[in-house]
Image (cartoon, rainbow, N blue to C red; front, side, top):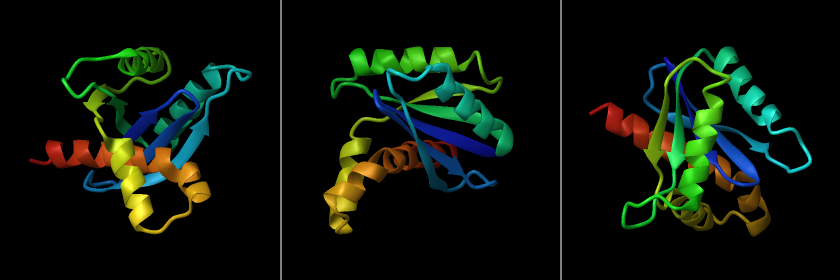
Length: 140
């Protein structure tokens, strides 16, 4: 039972995949989202991962404001999750991702990762933190 975690941004989608037991999240990749490309390519790439890794469910990070309300970024993630339903059949769960990107950035800085390298992996790390948070909560 693998679970896919997504950190959806305006320019990239960070991807994490759980181990087969659903205990740990590992960073997988980052998909670029550009205005020039067909947006369907992002969804088709995710659908391919779901098939290739036998993914049971998808967890999409939902950025909420600190007071719990949903702003423009959160609405965009909700819309992304709705569109994704056209490409995959399993459940899609929206998971509160407040401060995951900030936490990922701090973790990479503390590991002395250069700014250039951080930029390349930050979304993947945020996806790992989103998915791991979900896995930890679901395992209780």
